[in-house]
Length: 420
Image (cartoon, rainbow, N blue to C red; front, side, top):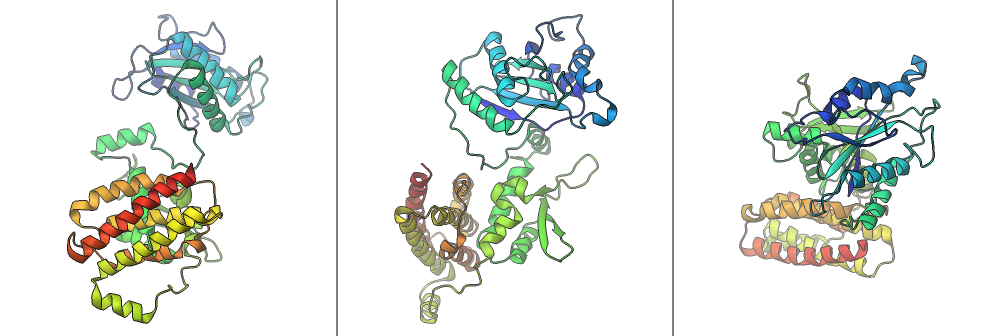
């Protein structure tokens, strides 16, 4: 069961109309109220005499009772709670109980609190409900909503156990933000395979792979065809960056920009710059070794040999080191290697490697702070892969790629054990 808290809004009537409407693709079937703060709350879905405006006035009454200068700008709170596809269809009574547990857990309407916020739960499909609430209590105070998303998730795990539903693995708060329904529908209208947020996240990760400096990283973003904005402090230091797809526009025909930190927690500028701090250190390779590589192997093949060796060393760190910061860094750098390998592999394997890199990127984040000074060899290997250029799928290049993939299989398994 997945609870998703949506952005706060300023118009109660607009959300009510959406909840009781047909939906973007007419997917809302029989929208109706299953529970509310007051059992006598009118239901515009099943009561012909009830109107959207009646429900709106009741929910907004505590907000409108405040002086205008004390009313919150964004007073509409919205959460959806969705069952898994394999779960049985729950009754309205079951969903009503789930709604009450959700508003109690999040702090919207704690059990036994008669002055809590007003709320209503609408069901317009078999597998989920939406809960709308207004963020002023009946006593005029604001609700305490600290960490309400995490508390909603914890309550969902308890609900799954109580109702015998599919047990969803608890999250750790490090996942990248998922596209909103509006972003998904926009992608469908534009004929995209995925939302702009996801496309940008992959492009930014690939630009980061093996980059040695902030300037190189930003140049790669521009070379990849993205629109890039940077924010500079009065001191001249770079504070942050935003990226946009050239053809992803809002209603005013302006590009829709996403800050790196909103694409994924580890794509914020400070987190990215942590990877560059030690990249000025020269690689541990002698001149004779470089000459030998250059004469005996193509640049892509030599880069793959270097990568296989670095992956083996990373495997030893993951398998034997007690330093979680070092292990987290090796896993994050492994993601860079996968991205670099996907960018430079032969055409017939490129799509598969891109999918592998996309799947692995979730494993590259955790609550453990990555200490990148322990993963410089892997990061340099990713850089050599990129600079070595595209590889052929046969001969030395093909054999080198196979050797790297062997090591990456072992690294992936060991990373899974570390996370577990």
